[in-house]
Length: 340
Image 1 (cartoon, one colour):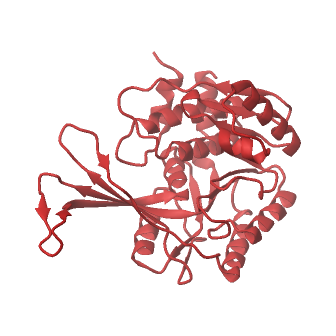
Image 2 (cartoon, one colour):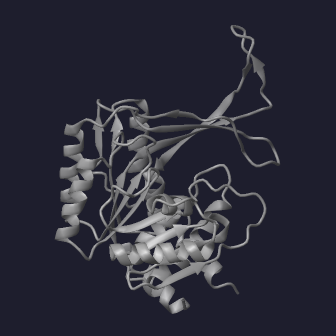
Image 3 (cartoon, helix red, strand yellow):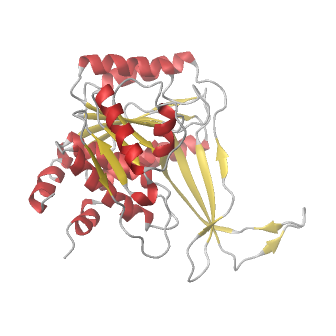
C-alpha cells in the first residue's frame, strides 16, 4: 500500500454510514486506590476504595468506539439495553460517541443490560492491575417479540447504510441480539443488497450465519469446518481460502501474535504478520478494532490485502493502550504503515 492509496481509502471514512448490530454492553471501570486500605467493620474483609468510575460502550460498543476514532461519518448502533441503571449509563455513553446516531437502539424491560464491571488497582509507576470481573448477562432466550422488533429495525437500517457489522458476544445461543429470527432478516438483506459489505464475528461461531464476510480466529475456523484446532499456518490459509470460495465472500482469520490472514472469493489469500510489541500490552479490544477497520476499509473500496494492513496496524496500536478498551485513529495507524 502506498501513502496515496492510504489517503484515498481513509478520506472516504467521513462519508461512510455503518450499522453495528449485536450485543452491546457497558464497560464499567472501578478505579481503586490501594493507598486507602480499610477493613470492613461488619465482615472483617478488606475494602477496595473506589476513587473513580469510568463507563464506556463495550462489546459491540467497542466497535462503535473504533469506527468513531477512524472518523466514520455516521454510525448506527442496533441492539438492546435494559431499563436499568446500567442501561442508562450505556445509552448515555453511546450518545456521547462522535458520529453515533442511536435512533434504532432499543431499551426494554425484558432484558438486563449486559455489563462488564472491571475493578482496576491503580498503583503509582505500575500498569493498572485488574481484579476479578463482575459480569452481568442474560441467561434466558431473547423474547420472540423483541427479536421481531430488532429484525424490523435491521431491515430499515439496511436501507440507510453502506455496510453492516454483526457481533455476537453472548455465551449461550439465542440469549442476545443475533437470534435465529434476526439472522433470517440478514438473509433477506443479502438478497436485496448483494453488494453491500456485511461482516460478522461471533463468540459462538458462524455456522448459523448466512454467507457474508466472516471474521474469526483459528480455533473458530477449525470448529466451523468440523476439524481440530490447528496452529499450522499453511493449513489455516488453505482452509480460509476454501471457505471464501465456497461462500463467495472474504474470510479473515486473526492469529494473535502471528497477525491476520485474509482470503478472497477468487481463491487468493494473504498473511500479514503482527507488529513487534513494545513493553506491557493489553489485548482487550484488539479484535474489535480489527473488525471496525476491516469493515470501514472494505466499505471504502479497499482490497482484502489493504484492509488487512490497516486492521493489523490498528490492532498493534490498541494492544499498547493499558487499563482501557482501546481504539486506533488514522493518525495513529499511518506511522506504523509508513515509518520514517
